[in-house]
Image (cartoon, rainbow, N blue to C red):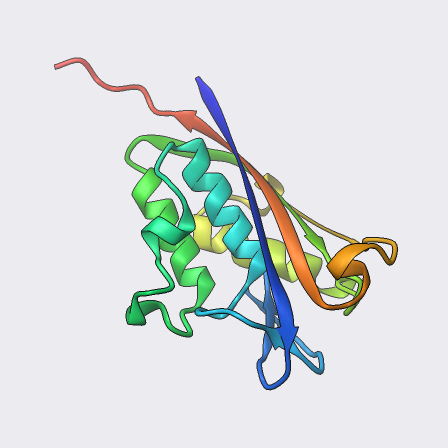
Length: 162
């Protein structure tokens, strides 16, 4: 049996922070505002995985009120999420779309796929990363921030009879 989860995240741009998306540092004049590293792509993916496993959401698992997660590397949070779902599920496929007017993300998509695959312990062929603009519309189109959506498909592991 397969289960599917969907995730969304967005963060506004802020000066003085490094931009990290999909676990990859991207040269840009601004980063994203957030308690952790504000990696919107990985946060959306974590929510998709947790949703597919019916384990809540990123805010419950890694609350921004907890000082342990201040500046946290979202790749570590993603790997921790994968470990939590591993006893009951196998990750079949994940698909992330980053919505950003700036910067251009095309050159970084394969590195993002590799980082995500490594963190989830799945082959890169099972990881999709896409980047889209918002055609000048909304906060993304006005270059005020970045959003991301993700879908995760999990396969339930069979329980052995006792």
